[in-house]
Length: 349
Image 1: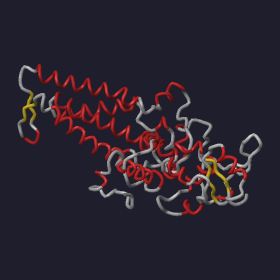
Image 2: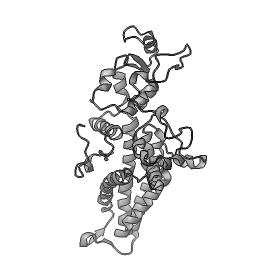
Image 3: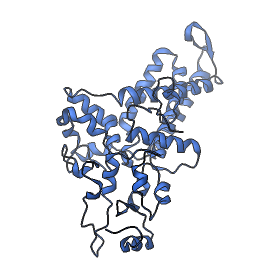
Image 4: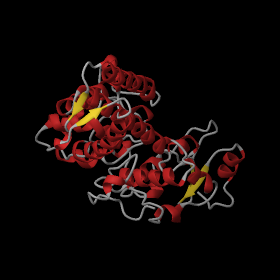
């Protein structure tokens, strides 16, 4: 493979509008990957037709891991037939100790459902699950079960916005039709709950969600399951590990409806233990709104192209969480709780 200036393969692809880059003297056509690039499509467009070897070796704006080089290897096109099919998919130029990909993964059989293979990973599970690949995966053998393990992003507002509106209406109805004033005694203080009071309660529920988002992500989704307890390994993988393994899988990003319903029911029940039912309903509405914002934000920073500084910063922050600092950066819709708990990822503006 020659240099960058006289490469006919590169010139032909660029004339066709393909998004190509060069690494170590080899051409990579990343057009089909651009929309899934964790750093955003605009970064690839910035270097179209250029040599990115030095940039990918640099630690700024973020470190490119073995998994990143493994993903890149899929798009090498320096040796193609007249039909345009790859004849050489091995990333020799990257060095065998430098990349991780599905092709180098000997721990699982990607042609089979993954869930049944998780218990056999043992001590290697936790490292394996944090080495991402650019693919979709199948969890279960039965199609019916598999269908409910996935969820497109638009189902979140379609399902949960009506639920939030219904609960808000029920809260208002319960307050206004109660034969006696609805009283609440938080911290020994007696409060009369009126229709106007619904709105600060909704806001409070939203604040509670931000804390719930952080705690669930840190202590449940990022627990380190003991290899001696296969059921905990499977639980970890189905709750969150699958997303870290295939972070670019669009249908395995937002929370599926069935487990989301279970969590929502538990949260509503928990609120009901400590507050009158109308108060619990109002706080639940705020928590539900917070969840909707969280899931849509999570999807957006993975697959969208942020136009504001805030969301660009969140995207960089979350990319580092996935590819470098899996034990830091647990805030997704906000970094707020990372600060008091000391889990802020450094050097991300």
